[in-house]
Figure 1 (cartoon, rainbow, N blue to C red):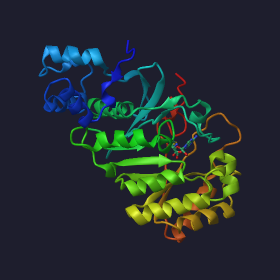
Figure 2 (figure 1 turned 45 degrees about the vertical axis):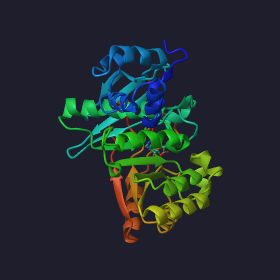
Figure 3 (figure 1 turned 135 degrees about the horizontal axis):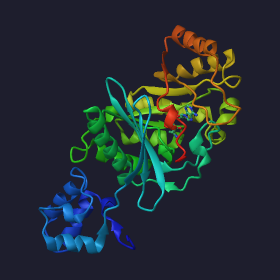
Figure 4 (figure 1 turned 90 degrees about the vertical axis):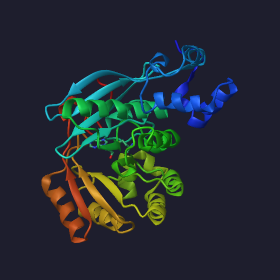
Length: 346
Ligand code: SAH
Protein backbone atom coordinates (compact mmCIF):
# COMPACT_ATOMS: atom_id res chain seq x y z
CA UNK A 1 0.00 0.00 0.00
CA UNK A 2 0.93 3.62 -0.48
CA UNK A 3 1.59 4.25 3.25
CA UNK A 4 3.59 7.41 3.73
CA UNK A 5 5.14 7.29 0.27
CA UNK A 6 4.52 10.34 -1.85
CA UNK A 7 2.76 10.33 -5.21
CA UNK A 8 5.65 10.99 -7.57
CA UNK A 9 3.35 12.77 -10.02
CA UNK A 10 2.72 15.52 -7.46
CA UNK A 11 6.28 16.70 -8.23
CA UNK A 12 7.03 19.25 -10.91
CA UNK A 13 9.78 18.52 -13.39
CA UNK A 14 12.15 20.82 -11.51
CA UNK A 15 11.39 19.12 -8.20
CA UNK A 16 12.08 15.77 -9.80
CA UNK A 17 15.39 17.02 -11.21
CA UNK A 18 16.35 18.36 -7.76
CA UNK A 19 15.45 15.04 -6.19
CA UNK A 20 17.89 13.18 -8.43
CA UNK A 21 20.66 15.68 -7.78
CA UNK A 22 20.13 15.22 -4.03
CA UNK A 23 20.35 11.48 -4.54
CA UNK A 24 23.72 12.00 -6.19
CA UNK A 25 22.43 11.32 -9.70
CA UNK A 26 22.19 13.64 -12.72
CA UNK A 27 19.36 16.18 -13.03
CA UNK A 28 18.74 14.75 -16.49
CA UNK A 29 17.49 11.53 -14.87
CA UNK A 30 14.56 13.66 -13.66
CA UNK A 31 13.66 14.51 -17.26
CA UNK A 32 13.70 10.85 -18.24
CA UNK A 33 11.47 9.81 -15.36
CA UNK A 34 9.18 12.77 -15.98
CA UNK A 35 8.73 11.67 -19.58
CA UNK A 36 7.85 8.17 -18.42
CA UNK A 37 5.30 9.50 -15.95
CA UNK A 38 3.54 11.89 -18.29
CA UNK A 39 3.93 11.46 -22.05
CA UNK A 40 4.61 7.71 -21.84
CA UNK A 41 2.01 7.14 -19.11
CA UNK A 42 4.02 4.55 -17.14
CA UNK A 43 1.95 2.84 -14.44
CA UNK A 44 4.91 1.27 -12.61
CA UNK A 45 8.59 2.04 -12.10
CA UNK A 46 9.21 -1.36 -13.65
CA UNK A 47 7.96 0.06 -16.99
CA UNK A 48 10.81 2.60 -17.13
CA UNK A 49 13.11 0.47 -19.21
CA UNK A 50 15.89 2.98 -19.81
CA UNK A 51 16.29 3.62 -16.06
CA UNK A 52 18.64 1.30 -14.17
CA UNK A 53 17.22 -1.36 -11.90
CA UNK A 54 18.98 0.25 -8.95
CA UNK A 55 17.38 3.64 -9.63
CA UNK A 56 13.96 2.07 -10.13
CA UNK A 57 14.27 0.34 -6.75
CA UNK A 58 15.30 3.61 -5.15
CA UNK A 59 12.22 5.31 -6.64
CA UNK A 60 10.09 2.46 -5.39
CA UNK A 61 11.37 3.11 -1.84
CA UNK A 62 10.37 6.78 -1.97
CA UNK A 63 7.30 7.04 -4.16
CA UNK A 64 4.13 5.53 -5.53
CA UNK A 65 2.48 6.17 -8.90
CA UNK A 66 -1.19 6.73 -8.15
CA UNK A 67 -2.93 5.86 -11.37
CA UNK A 68 -6.68 5.97 -11.76
CA UNK A 69 -8.44 2.80 -12.79
CA UNK A 70 -11.41 2.79 -15.15
CA UNK A 71 -13.73 0.63 -13.07
CA UNK A 72 -16.79 0.30 -15.28
CA UNK A 73 -17.65 1.50 -18.76
CA UNK A 74 -21.22 2.12 -19.94
CA UNK A 75 -22.14 2.78 -23.57
CA UNK A 76 -25.21 4.75 -24.62
CA UNK A 77 -27.28 3.96 -27.70
CA UNK A 78 -26.06 7.30 -29.12
CA UNK A 79 -22.39 6.28 -28.78
CA UNK A 80 -21.67 8.24 -25.61
CA UNK A 81 -19.40 6.38 -23.18
CA UNK A 82 -19.35 6.88 -19.43
CA UNK A 83 -16.37 5.80 -17.32
CA UNK A 84 -16.64 5.25 -13.60
CA UNK A 85 -13.12 5.94 -12.47
CA UNK A 86 -11.68 4.55 -9.26
CA UNK A 87 -9.11 6.71 -7.47
CA UNK A 88 -6.22 5.39 -5.37
CA UNK A 89 -8.25 5.82 -2.16
CA UNK A 90 -11.25 3.94 -3.53
CA UNK A 91 -13.42 6.99 -4.27
CA UNK A 92 -15.17 7.13 -7.63
CA UNK A 93 -15.71 9.92 -10.14
CA UNK A 94 -17.26 9.80 -13.58
CA UNK A 95 -16.08 11.06 -16.94
CA UNK A 96 -17.81 10.97 -20.30
CA UNK A 97 -16.74 10.60 -23.94
CA UNK A 98 -19.13 12.37 -26.32
CA UNK A 99 -18.62 11.46 -29.99
CA UNK A 100 -19.94 13.45 -32.95
CA UNK A 101 -19.07 13.31 -36.65
CA UNK A 102 -16.55 16.09 -36.34
CA UNK A 103 -15.07 15.63 -32.89
CA UNK A 104 -14.80 13.60 -29.74
CA UNK A 105 -15.16 15.48 -26.50
CA UNK A 106 -14.10 14.40 -23.02
CA UNK A 107 -16.24 15.68 -20.16
CA UNK A 108 -14.10 15.39 -17.02
CA UNK A 109 -14.61 15.77 -13.28
CA UNK A 110 -12.62 18.13 -11.08
CA UNK A 111 -13.85 17.11 -7.60
CA UNK A 112 -15.27 14.03 -5.89
CA UNK A 113 -18.83 15.23 -5.33
CA UNK A 114 -19.48 18.97 -5.30
CA UNK A 115 -19.63 21.69 -2.66
CA UNK A 116 -22.26 23.68 -4.55
CA UNK A 117 -25.93 22.88 -4.19
CA UNK A 118 -27.54 23.61 -7.56
CA UNK A 119 -31.04 22.27 -7.08
CA UNK A 120 -31.31 20.80 -10.58
CA UNK A 121 -28.03 18.86 -10.57
CA UNK A 122 -27.64 15.26 -9.41
CA UNK A 123 -23.99 15.73 -8.46
CA UNK A 124 -25.01 18.29 -5.82
CA UNK A 125 -26.57 15.45 -3.85
CA UNK A 126 -23.14 13.95 -3.30
CA UNK A 127 -21.15 15.56 -0.56
CA UNK A 128 -17.88 17.05 -1.73
CA UNK A 129 -15.35 14.50 -0.50
CA UNK A 130 -12.18 16.02 -1.87
CA UNK A 131 -10.50 17.81 -4.75
CA UNK A 132 -8.98 15.77 -7.53
CA UNK A 133 -5.21 15.96 -7.92
CA UNK A 134 -3.78 17.19 -11.22
CA UNK A 135 -2.77 13.67 -12.23
CA UNK A 136 -6.27 12.33 -11.52
CA UNK A 137 -7.74 14.92 -13.86
CA UNK A 138 -5.06 14.27 -16.47
CA UNK A 139 -5.57 10.50 -16.29
CA UNK A 140 -9.30 10.86 -17.03
CA UNK A 141 -8.38 12.65 -20.24
CA UNK A 142 -5.78 10.03 -21.19
CA UNK A 143 -8.32 7.24 -20.57
CA UNK A 144 -10.87 8.92 -22.83
CA UNK A 145 -8.28 9.63 -25.51
CA UNK A 146 -7.48 5.89 -25.55
CA UNK A 147 -11.18 5.00 -25.85
CA UNK A 148 -11.63 7.54 -28.62
CA UNK A 149 -8.81 5.90 -30.61
CA UNK A 150 -10.11 2.43 -29.86
CA UNK A 151 -13.81 2.93 -30.60
CA UNK A 152 -13.83 5.85 -33.04
CA UNK A 153 -10.40 5.62 -34.68
CA UNK A 154 -9.46 9.17 -33.84
CA UNK A 155 -7.80 10.99 -31.00
CA UNK A 156 -9.71 13.07 -28.54
CA UNK A 157 -10.27 16.58 -29.93
CA UNK A 158 -11.94 18.59 -27.14
CA UNK A 159 -12.21 18.69 -23.36
CA UNK A 160 -14.91 20.24 -21.22
CA UNK A 161 -14.70 20.59 -17.44
CA UNK A 162 -18.39 19.86 -17.02
CA UNK A 163 -18.26 16.62 -15.06
CA UNK A 164 -18.53 16.39 -11.30
CA UNK A 165 -17.44 19.32 -9.20
CA UNK A 166 -16.80 23.02 -9.52
CA UNK A 167 -13.45 23.49 -11.29
CA UNK A 168 -12.87 26.97 -9.88
CA UNK A 169 -13.11 25.58 -6.35
CA UNK A 170 -10.13 23.39 -7.25
CA UNK A 171 -8.41 25.98 -9.38
CA UNK A 172 -4.76 25.19 -8.67
CA UNK A 173 -5.06 21.52 -9.52
CA UNK A 174 -7.22 22.19 -12.59
CA UNK A 175 -4.60 24.60 -13.90
CA UNK A 176 -1.80 22.11 -13.27
CA UNK A 177 -3.77 19.43 -15.11
CA UNK A 178 -4.41 21.75 -18.05
CA UNK A 179 -0.71 22.62 -18.15
CA UNK A 180 0.05 18.93 -18.55
CA UNK A 181 -2.72 18.41 -21.10
CA UNK A 182 -1.44 21.26 -23.25
CA UNK A 183 2.28 20.67 -22.66
CA UNK A 184 4.21 19.01 -25.50
CA UNK A 185 5.59 16.61 -22.91
CA UNK A 186 2.03 15.74 -21.94
CA UNK A 187 -0.79 15.45 -24.48
CA UNK A 188 0.09 18.56 -26.47
CA UNK A 189 -3.53 19.64 -26.96
CA UNK A 190 -4.40 23.23 -27.81
CA UNK A 191 -5.97 25.22 -24.93
CA UNK A 192 -8.45 26.55 -27.49
CA UNK A 193 -10.01 23.08 -27.43
CA UNK A 194 -10.62 23.19 -23.70
CA UNK A 195 -13.63 24.71 -21.95
CA UNK A 196 -13.73 25.27 -18.21
CA UNK A 197 -17.31 25.57 -17.02
CA UNK A 198 -18.14 27.33 -13.76
CA UNK A 199 -21.11 28.40 -11.74
CA UNK A 200 -19.13 31.64 -11.38
CA UNK A 201 -16.61 32.38 -8.65
CA UNK A 202 -15.78 36.05 -9.32
CA UNK A 203 -12.47 36.16 -7.47
CA UNK A 204 -11.13 33.15 -9.38
CA UNK A 205 -12.43 34.39 -12.74
CA UNK A 206 -10.33 37.50 -12.18
CA UNK A 207 -7.35 35.42 -11.14
CA UNK A 208 -7.64 33.35 -14.33
CA UNK A 209 -7.64 36.57 -16.35
CA UNK A 210 -4.53 37.75 -14.49
CA UNK A 211 -2.88 34.37 -15.06
CA UNK A 212 -3.43 34.82 -18.79
CA UNK A 213 -5.06 31.44 -19.31
CA UNK A 214 -5.73 30.48 -22.93
CA UNK A 215 -8.64 28.09 -22.58
CA UNK A 216 -12.31 29.03 -23.00
CA UNK A 217 -14.65 30.00 -20.21
CA UNK A 218 -18.28 28.93 -19.87
CA UNK A 219 -20.56 30.19 -17.13
CA UNK A 220 -23.61 28.25 -15.98
CA UNK A 221 -25.95 31.19 -15.77
CA UNK A 222 -29.50 29.77 -15.89
CA UNK A 223 -30.94 33.10 -14.78
CA UNK A 224 -29.92 36.74 -14.96
CA UNK A 225 -32.24 37.69 -12.08
CA UNK A 226 -30.65 37.36 -8.64
CA UNK A 227 -33.79 36.20 -6.88
CA UNK A 228 -34.45 33.44 -9.40
CA UNK A 229 -30.81 32.40 -9.65
CA UNK A 230 -30.43 32.18 -5.88
CA UNK A 231 -33.52 30.02 -5.62
CA UNK A 232 -32.02 27.41 -7.99
CA UNK A 233 -28.30 28.02 -7.30
CA UNK A 234 -28.10 29.08 -3.63
CA UNK A 235 -24.43 29.83 -4.14
CA UNK A 236 -25.57 32.98 -5.99
CA UNK A 237 -26.45 34.58 -2.62
CA UNK A 238 -22.72 34.71 -1.84
CA UNK A 239 -21.63 35.66 -5.36
CA UNK A 240 -24.46 37.76 -6.80
CA UNK A 241 -24.80 38.67 -10.48
CA UNK A 242 -23.33 42.12 -9.96
CA UNK A 243 -20.01 40.57 -8.84
CA UNK A 244 -20.18 37.95 -11.58
CA UNK A 245 -20.74 40.63 -14.21
CA UNK A 246 -17.84 42.67 -12.92
CA UNK A 247 -15.49 39.67 -12.99
CA UNK A 248 -16.57 38.78 -16.54
CA UNK A 249 -15.91 42.33 -17.72
CA UNK A 250 -12.46 42.04 -16.19
CA UNK A 251 -11.96 38.65 -17.88
CA UNK A 252 -12.86 40.01 -21.30
CA UNK A 253 -10.78 43.12 -20.92
CA UNK A 254 -7.72 41.02 -20.16
CA UNK A 255 -8.23 37.97 -22.40
CA UNK A 256 -10.42 39.25 -25.25
CA UNK A 257 -12.00 35.81 -25.11
CA UNK A 258 -15.77 35.52 -25.52
CA UNK A 259 -17.79 33.88 -22.78
CA UNK A 260 -20.34 31.12 -23.26
CA UNK A 261 -23.41 31.20 -21.04
CA UNK A 262 -25.02 27.86 -20.37
CA UNK A 263 -28.70 28.11 -19.82
CA UNK A 264 -31.47 25.62 -19.12
CA UNK A 265 -35.05 26.86 -19.45
CA UNK A 266 -37.51 25.36 -16.95
CA UNK A 267 -41.24 25.50 -16.97
CA UNK A 268 -42.52 28.19 -14.59
CA UNK A 269 -39.05 28.99 -13.24
CA UNK A 270 -37.24 31.10 -15.85
CA UNK A 271 -39.50 31.01 -18.92
CA UNK A 272 -41.20 34.41 -18.67
CA UNK A 273 -40.57 37.53 -20.73
CA UNK A 274 -38.98 39.13 -17.68
CA UNK A 275 -36.41 36.30 -17.55
CA UNK A 276 -35.66 36.70 -21.25
CA UNK A 277 -35.25 40.48 -21.00
CA UNK A 278 -32.86 40.04 -18.07
CA UNK A 279 -30.73 37.56 -20.05
CA UNK A 280 -30.64 39.83 -23.11
CA UNK A 281 -29.50 42.68 -20.87
CA UNK A 282 -26.84 40.51 -19.19
CA UNK A 283 -25.52 39.43 -22.60
CA UNK A 284 -24.86 43.04 -23.51
CA UNK A 285 -22.21 43.49 -20.82
CA UNK A 286 -19.51 41.27 -22.33
CA UNK A 287 -19.13 39.64 -25.79
CA UNK A 288 -20.69 36.22 -25.45
CA UNK A 289 -22.86 33.49 -26.86
CA UNK A 290 -25.64 31.47 -25.24
CA UNK A 291 -25.98 27.68 -25.23
CA UNK A 292 -29.47 26.61 -24.33
CA UNK A 293 -29.10 23.13 -22.86
CA UNK A 294 -31.84 20.56 -22.71
CA UNK A 295 -32.82 19.70 -19.13
CA UNK A 296 -31.94 16.20 -17.97
CA UNK A 297 -34.44 15.20 -15.31
CA UNK A 298 -33.02 14.14 -11.96
CA UNK A 299 -36.19 13.07 -10.15
CA UNK A 300 -37.18 16.41 -8.72
CA UNK A 301 -40.71 17.34 -9.69
CA UNK A 302 -40.00 21.02 -9.28
CA UNK A 303 -37.94 21.08 -12.47
CA UNK A 304 -39.50 20.37 -15.87
CA UNK A 305 -38.08 21.20 -19.28
CA UNK A 306 -39.81 24.36 -20.55
CA UNK A 307 -42.26 24.19 -23.43
CA UNK A 308 -40.85 24.65 -26.93
CA UNK A 309 -42.61 27.96 -27.31
CA UNK A 310 -40.65 29.34 -24.33
CA UNK A 311 -37.36 28.23 -25.87
CA UNK A 312 -38.34 29.72 -29.21
CA UNK A 313 -39.16 32.94 -27.46
CA UNK A 314 -35.68 33.00 -25.92
CA UNK A 315 -34.09 32.37 -29.31
CA UNK A 316 -36.20 35.03 -30.99
CA UNK A 317 -35.27 37.76 -28.51
CA UNK A 318 -31.59 36.83 -28.30
CA UNK A 319 -31.22 36.77 -32.08
CA UNK A 320 -33.16 40.00 -32.44
CA UNK A 321 -30.46 41.50 -30.21
CA UNK A 322 -27.70 39.92 -32.32
CA UNK A 323 -26.68 37.48 -29.61
CA UNK A 324 -25.50 34.11 -30.89
CA UNK A 325 -27.57 31.28 -29.48
CA UNK A 326 -27.27 27.49 -29.92
CA UNK A 327 -29.62 24.83 -28.69
CA UNK A 328 -27.77 21.80 -27.36
CA UNK A 329 -29.37 18.38 -27.40
CA UNK A 330 -28.23 16.22 -24.56
CA UNK A 331 -26.29 13.01 -25.06
CA UNK A 332 -26.00 9.79 -23.11
CA UNK A 333 -29.24 10.22 -21.17
CA UNK A 334 -29.99 6.48 -21.13
CA UNK A 335 -26.84 5.81 -19.09
CA UNK A 336 -27.14 8.89 -16.82
CA UNK A 337 -24.16 10.48 -18.56
CA UNK A 338 -25.80 13.76 -19.59
CA UNK A 339 -25.12 17.16 -17.96
CA UNK A 340 -26.14 17.16 -14.33
CA UNK A 341 -26.74 13.41 -14.16
CA UNK A 342 -23.35 12.27 -12.87
CA UNK A 343 -23.99 10.79 -9.45
CA UNK A 344 -22.17 7.45 -9.23
CA UNK A 345 -25.42 5.53 -9.47
CA UNK A 346 -23.66 2.36 -10.52
N1 SAH B 1 -19.75 23.18 -11.70
C1 SAH B 1 -19.54 23.49 -13.08
C2 SAH B 1 -19.42 22.28 -13.98
C3 SAH B 1 -20.35 21.11 -13.78
S1 SAH B 1 -22.00 21.26 -14.35
C4 SAH B 1 -20.64 24.41 -13.57
O1 SAH B 1 -21.53 24.72 -12.79
O2 SAH B 1 -20.58 24.87 -14.68
C5 SAH B 1 -21.95 21.24 -16.08
C6 SAH B 1 -23.14 21.90 -16.74
O3 SAH B 1 -24.33 21.08 -16.62
C7 SAH B 1 -23.50 23.22 -16.11
O4 SAH B 1 -23.82 24.16 -17.09
C8 SAH B 1 -24.73 22.87 -15.31
O5 SAH B 1 -25.50 23.99 -15.02
C9 SAH B 1 -25.41 21.89 -16.21
N2 SAH B 1 -26.41 21.05 -15.54
C10 SAH B 1 -26.42 20.65 -14.27
N3 SAH B 1 -27.50 19.87 -14.02
C11 SAH B 1 -28.17 19.77 -15.18
C12 SAH B 1 -29.35 19.07 -15.58
N4 SAH B 1 -30.03 18.32 -14.73
N5 SAH B 1 -29.74 19.18 -16.87
C13 SAH B 1 -29.02 19.92 -17.75
N6 SAH B 1 -27.90 20.59 -17.43
C14 SAH B 1 -27.49 20.52 -16.16
